[in-house]
Image (tube, rainbow, N blue to C red; front, side, top):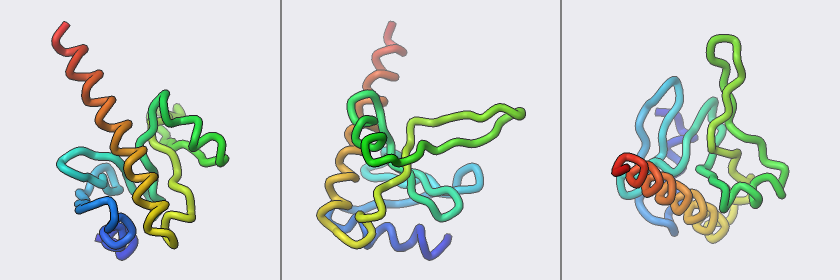
Amino acid sequence: MSAFVENLQEVFALFGTVTSRRMFGGFGVYHDGLMFALVADDVLYLKADEKSVGAFVGLGLAPFEYVKGGKKMKMSYFMAPEGIFDDPEQARIWAIVAFEAALRATKRTAGAAKK
């Protein structure tokens, strides 16, 4: 595990316990068993959805993208604001935003599965 990923426990200390797991060449970042962030090439991306994406876009934060079969794919994760690495309260706020987006996505998926 990279030092960057290990440091996320300290970054999100006010938010609560976070864990990470290797996935697809990067890491998934979890709280209470739910992935709310990912790390790729030592860049932190936070989960976003239609309710929260404007906050990321408003700050000019880029979405996580990767290439699959020669096609650029976008995911619902956006770069984290740099300020969270120096400001524990800001880190807590952004973690809540991302975690709530992850919770909403889980509820949508569960609702769709019931239909």
